[in-house]
Image 1 (cartoon, rainbow, N blue to C red):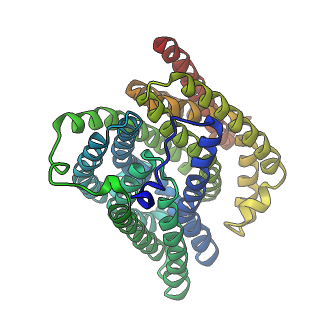
Image 2: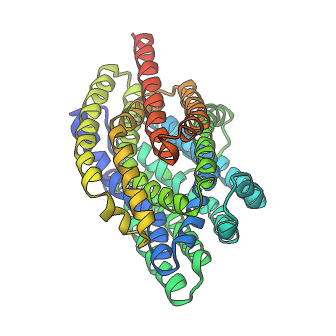
Length: 447
């Protein structure tokens, strides 16, 4: 039993900043490896196939994110409820929440995956995807739709483990699957010349291995995954609680994805060079997101456990320390993007027009990283508290911003296509300020 308990981290005692960093580091490494799925696809396809193939993969990013988001919100909601039961010391409720979240996650991703597969071409048409890359974009997206079930499997298992304070176990399997993905990418794209289809198949296989491996390990080694017949009973109250929090989170992620689709439509209107540059900068920004996202997720678990234990002072302390860590990272990234943008974009493509455009784009968005960080830190606290309204509010703000701001800015002659990336930073600022105002309101409510 001691061996099984060793991976469980109680975050209701000890230094908040030490616990958050301890929990964050394995999760950050895992998130970076997870981003390598798309990054490896982009680099290998961009270098071995060409800029058009890279653009085809990029054109599907916001769409696949939409359907992944619908599923991941439920898993995240279940993880937050689980962390609250864990902080309250109720082992029976913890097991019941793991089981009932699992029941929901058995069905929902399959339904979403089927719908996404059938709507692939109509959605890409709606986004004005350039005709030259349409066939490859549809093929890649449909493979990703099949992979929704695999991604959801891993995210479910990892969400439950992280709710219990175990951020290391998901990391180990993610590293293995990322290495597998890289090897399969080279095999299918470079050796078998399968282009974007090969990249999609490689990613789907790697995601399947990661999800199954993580779940099997959890069942065998973690005490909270060892269920009696009583634990396996359907609990209506817990299921509804997971859905009440998970659905707003899904809507939040989905609204953000829809807002990204609106931005992608504007990008597509500027042609395939702009699409390739936007794809490259988006991949870089996905990596930049990871420290913020990891910090927010760690803070969510920290907040959930301490909220369950009714230790509100520790929640406030964790929030302040996390803001400090976020500010340090934001300041360190700014000079890197300002002076080394060309070298970074060159990793993806050799097309000089794409490199020049992408480097300038990174210089623009890097000024707004601190606002991006505020979004994740505040979201982590509010999600841990179970504030389902904020999830919906944050998504609405992003939708309004991404539908309106890029259209307005790109129509100003002096700004033109650079309005694409200025709008990214402006929308981050809108969301960050909204999140901060919601936190101030919620903090007053808790007193």
